[in-house]
Length: 442
Image 1 (cartoon, rainbow, N blue to C red):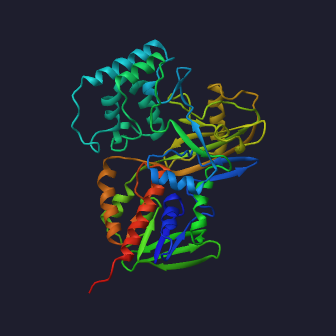
Image 2 (image 1 turned 60 degrees about the horizontal axis):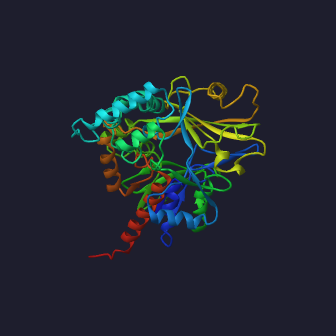
Image 3 (image 1 turned 120 degrees about the vertical axis):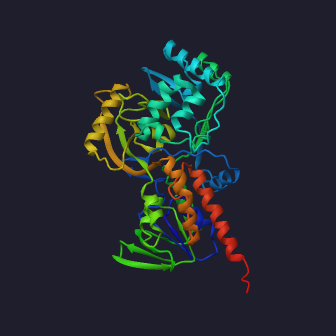
């Protein structure tokens, strides 16, 4: 028996690709999808912050397009940065045109200086994220966007974070691209997501739900309580029935956050328990708003690096699909990061969000908020720091030794996309199928 913990994209993909083998999939919530989920409120549909599909793997793209045949629409990215009371296109490093001349000069001169510096031989896991920014983009771009934005998002000094995650998310441009961007010349798209796919109706929840037709029953409202890794037994609490359930497994697939999994394994080595407890992450308040005015913005999303704004990003779901809101209205999601132990009242967050949106000119003082709702995403972005670099390989290796495969963004404690989660589930299922097919030898 294969037991899967968590019906997010990684868990669902694993189950979908295990077809024909005995397995059970358990989900703590009533709905599948993990953070790749949507909910409806007063005529609006909100995702658990922005979830947009962009692909680098042909096989995963083909799978998703087959599962969601006729339900996806393609969009050309309309994302911007708001700083110095000016909108510039994303990504910042190749779109400084329109900023004050002295800011453009600092960004250009700083970037040019990086081209004459010797290439650092420091391993990515040993070089700080801040140093990576300075080495690759220069002190001007660091000052005017990269450092303030990322410190607002991560809620720590960038000296504490390593750079072994940035290669595909923050590509280094060529000098020509930077100069063109300073002059307002656009001759190519830049970044990993210049276009994206999004469901025409019902929000991102249709993606995880599309796997269900190929999956045996999901055991919902069942939370993992404890794993006896030596006897290979998993204990669950079934909230609907108010009872405990024990599963014996040959392999356990976990997609829950690594610290949560290890905490539930009493017989795990103490030094690795302590290592898991030392992993860090940042949480995000997802403030969802419905406004009784059409098209408060024509953009898909906007980044806010400056400290005068409490949020780091604002997105507009009805720009992805008008079906996500009510006629004559607009909707938006506002992202405010916070440390996991810090808590703020929803009313305070909504007021802060509204004040910042008015300051930016997105909302007007007379705008009526017909919906205002807050979701606290406890696990949002994991920290890549020096502790993670040492702890995660050792933890994952010991879990594997005990028949536990920890996958997905939080299961591998990494920065990955929806596509990556689906791909990890598919590959693991193929590995497990291969193990089942191996002949038994004396």
